[in-house]
Image 1 (cartoon, helix red, strand yellow):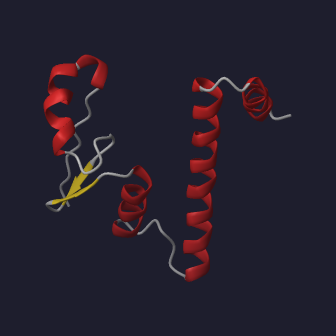
Image 2: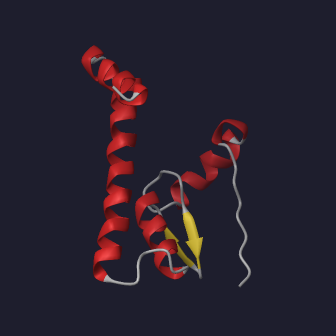
Length: 102
């Protein structure tokens, strides 16, 4: 199976992103185009690729465990975004504690 990945940093290609943004499903990145179809949500793309390449589990229980790990990642990312961009000092403290393992 042959695949290719195109990775561009928006900060380095602002003029390109301004033109491509309206062409994305939700006006956001990342975007996965796979077999002619475009997926505009990172977790949906991750799950698709996991199923396509045999990483989503062979049984329903294995698939549930894989989904659980994905959801933990979503929770961590959400907490990081709130802590980084928000004005809630307690959220920032929780994030530091989480990272420190406390």
